[in-house]
View 1 (tube, rainbow, N blue to C red):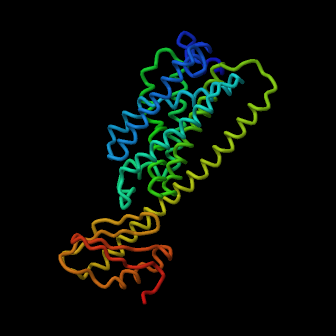
View 2: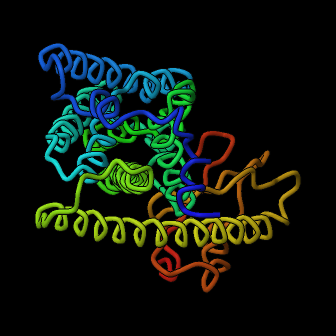
View 3: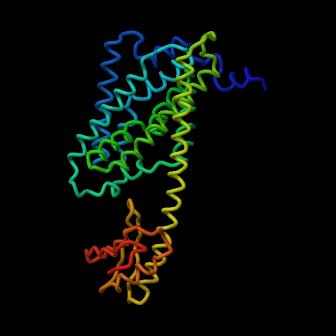
Length: 335
């Protein structure tokens, strides 16, 4: 099958939107600028407030609602169209301003959380602070689907699903909430998730729009080439970070399983005692145990963990009686 045939099957000519129609949707400077600017910023602020409320209250339904009405994907896809058209749309400034506004709203939302609040106990936060390679793959596929949906007249109904799948505003809210609580590494993880999603949209959109023939006649455009190189370089960096995060997640999961096995052996001599769970947060293993009486000497647990997990990681045992026992750090003998 020829290239033209593949393009026709992807978006039939009868359903393909014109360049003018696509520009009218994605370029906020087209048409009535005042109205379009007002609509964009109003909906962005409202979606950010909704997302912040959903994150703070750990409500998945509320966060999904924010994803559907968030308009941030419009200027991001506008960046892709601008690269293909070889024209400046100003979309990057809308994206940058939007990012700052959403993070600011997240910072304000962090004031609603107590200083002692465990951020990783909130699924809306923990699920967005350790992105992996699978998130990048999903983002690229979502970007391709979104670009095709924008280019076709007959599949606009899928765009809300694309908005939910790509998740732009919630990660930025999480960045603000984490920064407000001093959790800078968690904030960085959420920012990497946003960047991977944004870059996936731009690169996938650029590819689809170019394949569908929305390009303008070739011309020497140094700034465009530099922009493509910058996006490609940033994409490589983000991909490497996500690969590293994926490897780290597998390592943490393996360590948690090994710690649970060692802790179960440590409790084996205690009647009706068991390990109910192990979770690694930052550099500390939290071991939850159920026991009707006291736990065995914790020095024995620390000794058993020596060589099982890397030295320097802290261990804390939490009992069903409400006690939190600081065991110490692996590889450091107790005095």
